[in-house]
Image (cartoon, rainbow, N blue to C red):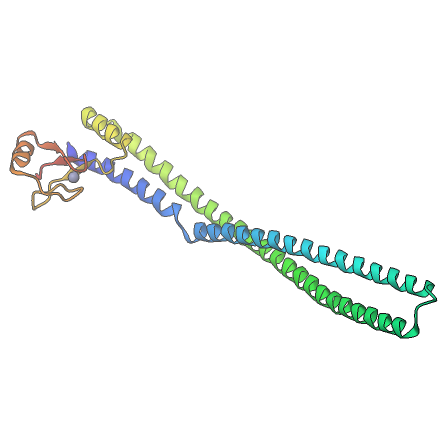
Length: 228
Ligand SMILES: [Zn+2]
């Protein structure tokens, strides 16, 4: 009577194995990696955006400085009573300031070019990661589809077997399975241990098992069946 039950359980274990195998495939790993890569790149582009804003701020400051120097020069042109040495000194001073601004603008331009390049690079990598994810997902969906067909076939086979199973054993089986215990039925090992968790049975437990032919394992809640 237990033989059919074990055969039935064997199919259920195959289903469990299929589900487990397909949850983690090389494709699911590629998908997870792609998702985390996109996340990192999004953080990076956000930071680049903040950097770009800073560079624009700097650019505005430089433009303001240029304007103020221009105003100073205009004022200088209107003031005719300033001694020529003083004008010469001021012109020199403004010229130095203009040089400094010029070199800052050069640096700023290089920074902006760099940010643009990094931004384009990140955009390209996001595109690549999304593409990888898409390809892996298609393969994974294929695997899941195949596995689902196999699982459905096994389920049908099990359903057909149920008619010939002992009703009480089947009920116990389904109750245990509902509690996430699978396999439900295990054989007593040669060392008189539970075939599920391998815990050795105490003498009184073993006697009870010999008497009743079955025993619920205290450790893993599986149903131990006596060796035939
Ligand atoms: Zn056990």
